[in-house]
Image 1 (cartoon, one colour):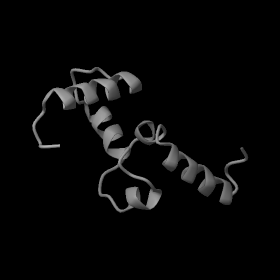
Image 2: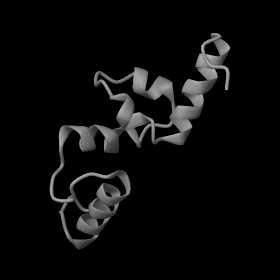
Image 3: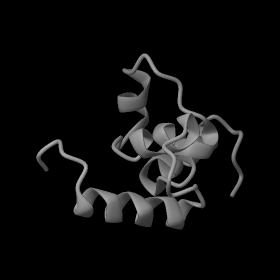
Image 4: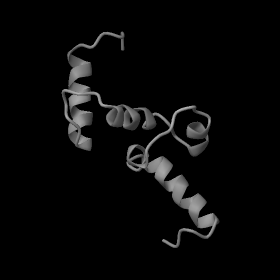
Length: 80
């Protein structure tokens, strides 16, 4: 990673966009938020941010989804 948007970055972004249903020629606020959220491994890491992440952007992160489920279950909201 060198900060230059070259072929490897292009291919990686196209793969990300394809896998999550985004346009591969645009970095929208929605796709940027989703991509940023994938870097987080826990709710506490998200809580420490000043940004808001949409549910869409975090629901595909299994580590965060599992933690959300556990917290909701602990509070009696999740019965699955």
